[in-house]
Length: 499
Image (tube, rainbow, N blue to C red; front, side, top):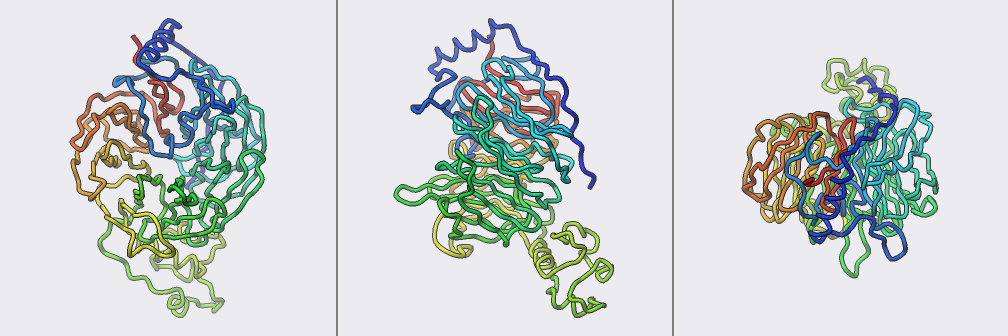
């Protein structure tokens, strides 16, 4: 697959509606009882409002009110700011909004005034590497994370960098290069003063925790049981117990100690190449796992590595070359099988190939807890039809929402996995990379082509409006103070109910 080139940075153009509209929106928000922007935490930091990918806990849910149902490039726009391409989503702390972009030469982090859309600062890193990326992915896919004091960003072509909210660099920690054929896409998270970053790749997967103040490495945990993945982890907390990291990976979900990175328990039966964020509700974890080939009811019987060596290792060197398996099933998708890219199939390469062919797509409800392998005890239910590829599920007002490519929306009962409703969104039937968010009794969706349906929330959901952003969109919206922040391919928008 050819490497997609990110377009060069172009001069940033900032356009805004009349100041009277901005003032009217602020007055209306205060009258409705919303917290004003720029809330300051007790320690003087800007309080995080939408701190990470998909907001608090990665759940994609806000208790805000009065958001617009209809919006677009010329409707209910408070401001709009031109930006270079990138797939990262906005995060918010106080009156600041942060996101990333990239050019062929630079990796750029932006600090933006979320009242006006004015770029307050931008910091660039030299892009010394140019790794392979899928055509819908880029080096600016991971979403930043902030606690209101620092904002931490990750670039697959560099590593972690932390800035103070005023743009001063605090520390940097180079990584890689990473061996992921589609490029990196997981985002960092912040928990208990630690920045946690999952680096799943075709070979050498690992996870790190670093001190958010200094960038000092606190622990590193190898993940040899998984290959490439793109899922951002979650934190499970229970009163009186140490917090755990819930980390999806290829073929399994694993729980680790947040304090030490120790592997605690795991559950098998996932698809390959997980992308969705896990949702945590009480002692339950909900996770969607889909990848092409995982829907087949017919499992392929693949011999062991030793059996294939016996038949095809012509030069008896204990390895399988492309020529030696010519005509056999793995020969065609060689780049997906030769994980360490040494042009031979090792036993590890082969066993992961077998696991891929045996994997099953499913949306799962999982009971938390235990030690060791919990596959046989902790799965509450599985649902296997009409699953999203990239877009994460949404749990909102006791209903699970899934949006599949083609605009198929499914609602499930989170207790039983029973389908409540399934229907196609007329006029928004393309692909979905952005994840849904729930707010004010509504569910907001955005397709790749910029179609933005708004649903009335509920098991028997209804379409309230179909908006058109007239541009591609891969990012998930952020929500704060009655405003919807949406990043398209070329523009960052702030939408609100403008009088």
